[in-house]
Image 1 (cartoon, helix red, strand yellow):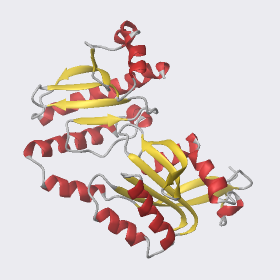
Image 2 (cartoon, helix red, strand yellow):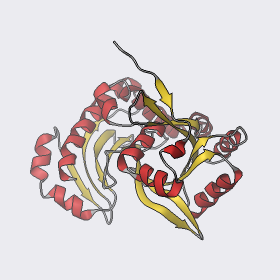
Image 3 (cartoon, helix red, strand yellow):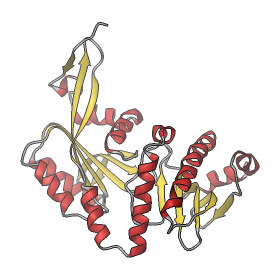
Image 4 (cartoon, one colour):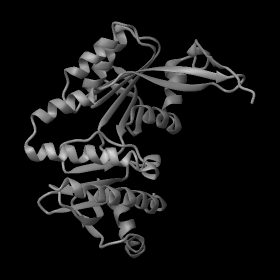
Length: 305
């Protein structure tokens, strides 16, 4: 077999001469945001390019697909500098951002610990990411981008801190979703389709399905002794009515009784399964049920999107 060599394109401006006119429009395209999403494990949906923040302009303003958390992205096709770090914090404040992403050619030594310090001294709702972008070719191929994570939120450290402050029920909820993540990443068909979330001390777990219209929601209701999985629509009654108009066809594809609920803004439909939340030996059976139905729900819902 004949093999070729990887060649790195050192000067990013050979491909993107201008950050605002070339790189930002490239990154804002769906496929390229998907590459960034895959790298950091967060599903990013574009809201606006060159989004105003006072008299300044943010490169990319976005949302996390299933949670609606605010994301800002600042690009820099050169080494990090104090000017862009200051802009990053200004934009984060102006947009009330939860996820702050700084993409650069190279992270200087003094800015790595700065981002690490910000992650260490913010709460569980805020996360800073510092990434370097590279371009590579194989022989005479087209250049291919590669994102490298330099700094990211210390989810483990924050989770440990959070666990110390939890009630016994909250601690068990955190343990439950951590155990689900361990199970789901080994369920290959599920892992090939979905990105896992960081486990939290709460009774629900959201899974993105490639649209901001809706997402899959898992629940573990201790008092009601039941688990649920279904489609959650945060604010789109027209889409919900489209689904209910085809209720019989949807229910025919799902095994079990389907519950349909509509509130002032949100709407959902879901399946239920008995759950003995305090019996850890029974969790695996529920996790299997989650994974099987998540795959099925995504295949059903995609025809309506």
